[in-house]
Image (cartoon, rainbow, N blue to C red; front, side):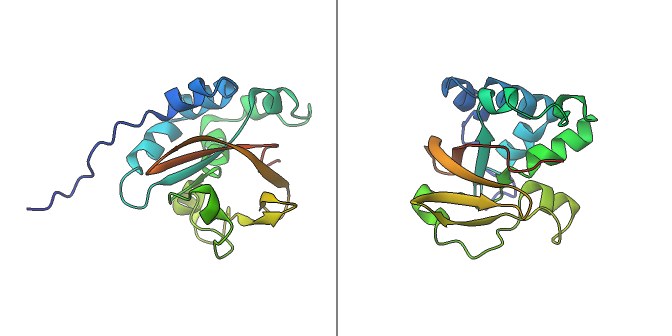
Amino acid sequence: MASETRPLLGINITKALIDGHQFNVAASMLQASGVVSESEGDEGGAGITIFVPTDDAFADLPSSVKLQSLPAEKKAVVLRFHVLHCYYPLGSLESIVNPVQPTLATKQIGAASFTLNISRVNGSVGIDTGIVQASVTQTVFDQKPVDIYQLEVWVFWW
């Protein structure tokens, strides 16, 4: 008899980020916001793909961007926007039909919001929100059903 619950796959997203040695801020924010729990809950089925900035990217945020002072729910929306509800190995990112949906934010808020366009730009994978463009600079973690990629900048600004 098939179970309605997904099997626990034992992938610890926070540990994978901390083991990456330059994602402590992202790991802490993802954990504190509850987005890690949501993401780990989505590991089964289609899997997940997470795009994260480095600690240096957080330090380089313009002073007008007050990410840390956002209310918890708005911070969680920003973080959910960096998670795709599907496992995409690096080679697969180039062949996605745009816009990519859903991010976890799209899933929660609605199909017309929070989409990412992913394409090949200057030999690397580029991400365009319509507001900000970023590039995937390295694979942080790749173990099916979870992929984590480093971004050169935050994908979403206010």
